Image (cartoon, rainbow, N blue to C red):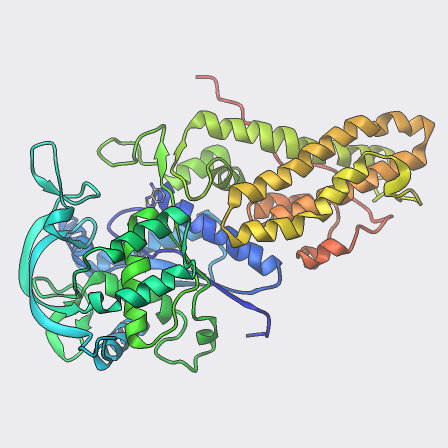
Length: 521
Ligand code: MSP
């Protein structure tokens, strides 16, 4: 570690029962944007993603495919790794729960939990028999009272997943004894947004059952230390990935300085596991707790839940091919506030591509750069001695741009991506308005020095915008900065303070955000 402030951010690790879809891409994208943002803002970032490979659900999928589980998980995990390339994620590690480092880590975590007493002085782990409902799809145990009725009166998990009756010897975790400590943790604001905080708080205030943390009726998992007849419950195994990657159990490992994580980003479906079970396991093992858990909303398609049976599961690859990578990255975080559910429709993405990207940002860059190319000898113009008191409108856009960093930082701390983008777009729209007001094309004949000032201030505004939008659209913003001849090592948020140098040669301008035109049928 370099002495910069650390920032450790994680995605959920994805089940390898099937190929990744746009919902998986969405969570990881949010993490990627934050990881890039924090790196540019001077933090020492560790960004982790990976795959969750044990448990009954994965075992069953392998069997259904007629495959050996290890071979099967190797292949499906590779598809998630390919997703990180496709989507241009900047993850620093990709963890798989079948790796040796992870097995060691889980077993040591178990030993520590078992070696400690609960706040009520009881053993944290005890052996008993589990008799109750289990959903393989959710990999979750449910109490009778939590179940709902399906269309044919059958019992179902609250998520709508089928449940089956399970009865087998099991180790239990003394969850109930950790209630007060969990409530204290929530009172510090660790769970966001507030709707998720309320949900877990009321869950923990209610009747808390001890949690079954081992299984004996199948074998695709990590053996419980000292009792090979049991494998660990897949969620205990999976959650532990976050400390494995930080080097656990080697607390002298370099990566251990990243722990506790600054942020676990997850979907709203798995809040209970991350905000109740995970901190309880960690507390019982004497390990510090993650600083924040954010449960975002779900993406639906044209108003409907994505599902195989509806045939509306969106493939990230198809969407990138059709709309463009940065266009998709922008759209996913722009359209819907991150904590809310949102719907994807073709019409919405095409609208955003054409109005926000092509018309607002693309057009601003294109017209300013081509005016500079034509009228300023293809060099960064000289701003002269004019300043904000000159009465030129463009200075208002620039001062808006200069105020962005602090505002964006505050929004990034709250995972408010749509607020970040709205803030930047206010400046972009203002810059476009100022181009019209100052009309540099008219100044060309009457006052060329003033025209140079206007174009310089606009170029400087675009530089700010392009630097600040890099986390969302790394390639496109990189190309915009190339066109302004901004050196690759001068693109961090600290570099915002070093203005463009007049006289620098500029390459021939090229549009970065084309309009999306529907192909004729
Ligand atoms: N393996 C567990 C997580 C273990 S983390 C220690 C798991 N995996 S999963 O493959 O089912 O992925 C769940 C996550 O994918 C969700 O929490 C969410 O982040 C993301 N999404 C899956 N479908 C989604 C949508 N339709 N919309 C948005 N995100 C969704 O649960």
